[in-house]
Length: 237
Length: 204
Image 1 (tube, one colour):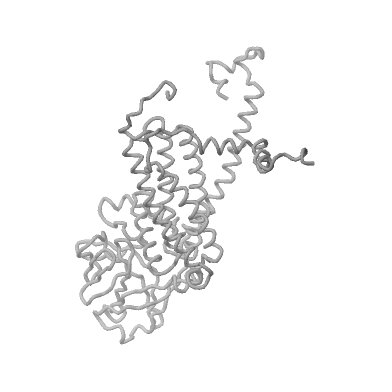
Image 2: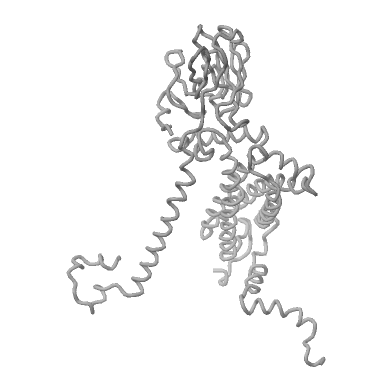
């Protein structure tokens, strides 16, 4: 019998091989994780990974919040209060989502600043920069739509000010305000619309763009810092 | 298809053995698939956009709110009195504040409390309206005296019926020669009603 069974190490590898043989996903993962990067990169190049981590955190805590939250003007704030005061560890979930949103914006600025100052947006990485810029705009929209959902006085009036700022754009501004509020004033529909944007449209778009952004990063590789003394070899070109 | 237009007079070709005269099966199928896909996309996108945007421009539900008897002594002449009322059917969300000033037996100035900078609520302070958000200031006629607002405060339309005062919709106002003139349309805060810039903001 002992001759029929492979050693334990081989048995543990079997499911991995099964997946690899049918999908090639294990090689893809290995290629992503063990690809070559310049010798002189530093912690500054990890801001992007940090952003992906915060995005996953926001998505997870967002799903958890959605399990109790109701986007209805009469009950929205009561459900927020329930999450904060009564739900098991609800204060932690809500706190992580709230602080995570601020951290995401801060990291985004740092990541963008690093890319800009290192000149890492230059050929052939323009598309990486452009997709990143769109993600930046969408994250701003996430912050704006998420702010209303708490539906306390601050959320209400801040959203009025925000919508009216949009409204001061020439030509299309007023129409944009009406579309955002579903009419000339904040109504029950405004809350549902912001909720739908915040939990379905925007995260879906951001997730897709992150995938594209990462594909470009892996395909094009990471840039050395501008002060790099590394020699460019034939192989690199 | 592009091949058809490649040569001038292509329509006159009748030789099916000439590769320039015919579209290959695979090119035709590719084109047909793309065209059909595009058509399906448009058929889904157009109603979806209409569904999303349509209700935004339908106008709102509102009704005449009764402010009580027109000869109510609680509305003294020449003095602003804040009134909290509901101007739609959404309860809390339709709650508004108007400042009512009696100008005559059946004449009133009914000022909206929405600041024309970015929409915060203003307060009345004996001689002026003041906004807490960004410091907008208005005189007793609602004309801006300081801060960022770019037009006078909105005013509500009103009517007197069977001895009762009714208040309707808020309308934009504009300043003409130092006097406030009510317009017949609603405009969001931050949108100018006079001058060249007002041309940049079409009515919705």
